[in-house]
Amino acid sequence: PRFILDAEMLHKLVRTKSVTKGGDEGNGEGLQRVLGLFDVLTFGLGNIIGAGIFVLTGVAASQIAGPGVALCFIFDGFSCIFTALCYAELSSSLPMTGSAYTYTYFAIGEIVAYLVGLSLFIEYQFAIAAVSRGGSAYIIKFLGIIGFEGKLPSWLGETDVNVGGPLNLNVDLVAILIVAAITAYILLGVRESAMLNNLLTGLCILVVLFVIVVGAFYVEPTNWSPFFPFGFFSVFRGAAVVFFSFIGFDSAANLGEEVVNPQRNLPLGIIGALLISTALYAGVGLTITGMVPYDQIDILAPLSEAFRLKGIKWASIFITIGALAAIFTTLVTSQIAGTRVLFALSRDGLLPPFFSKLWRGSPFFGTLVTGFCGLIFSLFMDINLLAELVSAGTLVSFVVVCSCLIFFRAKSRQPSRFESYHKKKLYWIVTSHILLSIVASQVILSLNVYAGVPLAAFILICSFLSVHYYFRMEGLNLVSVDDGDKGFGSISSNEKTFEVPFVPFVPLIGLTMNVYMLCNLQWIAWTGLLVWLFLGLILYFSYGMHHSKAEIVELTATSQPENLTHF
Image: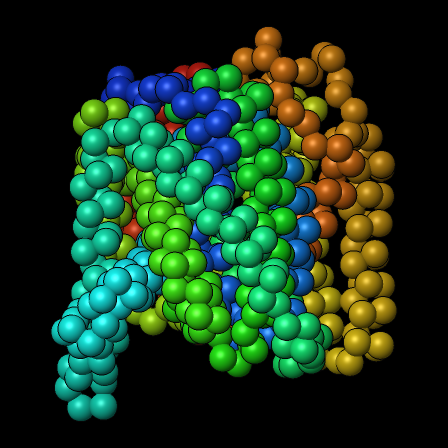
């Protein structure tokens, strides 16, 4: 293969997918539209609630933010609303599987889409591993509560295993069994998985409301003092760590090809799941830190252990059952979303074709690979490291999705000038804003609040005004809809789609907030992300670029240049 970055190579890296093709392309097999609004809502809630409330609340409260963990979740919810709005419009206009990967392929280009797709996949695998480890702790707690305490072998849960010299692995066998069981169930089909998810999500929400209402009677306000034991800015650090709890609306967007009336149901399900879960997160964060001093909160099973310490054993059993239900819903939704990402990549020719083969309406090999990867990661990776890695992958995907909406609006408003003119300029504009957001974030993190925030605000305001000036000078209106161009931005010109107000400012705000939280992550998260992206580049140049469906179309249609996408 040629790796010289000439005009031909550059064209391949940034070629985009046609909007008019997508739904059922590939090998003639397609996913079935069998899910409604309630399914989308519970799919998002099941993914969001399980990981954050029952697993990461303890980590963030005891080690990072203290009682301020409630503000961590509120800040995440506030920052996510801008990203969720971008997801809502893109999923409404492009109701196909693959979520961020698919949107990026349509709006920005192949190489970025490929890396986003792989980032999404590994993000879901880390999420599966992290949540299965939390589920393992809850199962062992539950067995202890009902009379098996002290009777279980020590190697059943987390165990340090020496693999030679100073190297130790933290192995969790119960987590492996959980992932294997979920993988086997998902192979039955998406309809069956959705039915189980709806049931377990309902139980989970009931338990969360129980924690908030009953736990409020055991709150000791003195436990909230100090409210920020690690400093005020620990809230943002905690928000970055628990951010992966909010990937639920990305997993809901992955159901684009399996949802009935996606133009209505996807936006409502995505935004509804985010708003409901944010309120539940904040309530549980305040309750748990009010019941137990933050430095005594159990990291792996914070809610059930808090009630056990208060002597409410029956409540502890009930909460543990709800926690297991929530964890299982998170595992189901994360694994389904991961398989859909592989399905979309394979259908576009960027991964081998067996990933897009269906059995009982679901990707068979993709499900097995997703389960196997999650199983391996859950075997030996620490939950704190997993939380950091998942948050890094999630935030990168969110940054790209916010950028996608700007490209998508420009493409839909002025399709005739987008490829030949606007696309190149938007690359520079969006990249510049990302870099300035990184600078502003580092200014806030490096200086004190009185000096850092005003300087960072000045940098960002200049960036926002520069973007606005460009669109004004070019006469590119991304806010209002031109009836002459209406319909280009969706699969069907006859279907009304959701549209985000105040574009490009809403996606730019979302992009900025996601970048800030990225800058709050530790170096290990950045290292893991960069290593994975480097491996992704190797895979793309060795396989993806040469087997892409876009490559095949270009080779067979060179006599029809109007069908090609030019940079």
